[in-house]
Image (cartoon, rainbow, N blue to C red):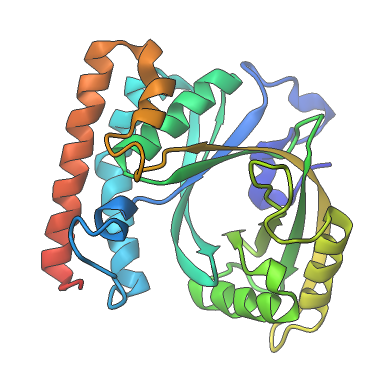
Length: 278
């Protein structure tokens, strides 16, 4: 089952569209605020005074200046489709997120996710295939009577959904007039939400039906294939978990990725000074 028009990349436009030239289209979801730098105290920041608009400006800067270089280093420049900036939520907080959709093999997409996580100093990067045959992770799509879900609407629904059921406070991302919730699993295979997929979808539907003042409705539900590409910066402070995935790229590419990581840290420190983040 295809998602709405905003996620048309997850499946073909029709019977005449033909098979994808490389493989299934997958979505890579990530942020560019370098979390270990402040979560582990390197810069002694909380970023509580960093507005959404400021975070978005930094995200746009990094996307335009650095993302093409990361993509090129993992050899996927020709396969890139697009990278969209959208509101995305985690633990009841909405941040600017980047969603990259591309046609590539599973190994290639995992390499891209590891490179993004390493260069942008992320704890994890999410890879989702909404057309996966084996699925395994339930999802629910809510559509609103607006052209675009902005950060304010995304956050309002996020909070409302978490009030309906605490299991919906984990995360979401928006595309166009839709928000998508994934019933993500931990390493033990159990949903972080504490809900089985049917209960998860039912809770999302209840949240949509009871949301005001905008009209919202459950548009679709199904299963997706999901993996996390992760690095534990507490036990792997040099990004070793990501680097293990990236090792086949060779020493030259790894050195260039390390240089990009340093550039990104400097860009972040400049943003901290420019915006007065604390």
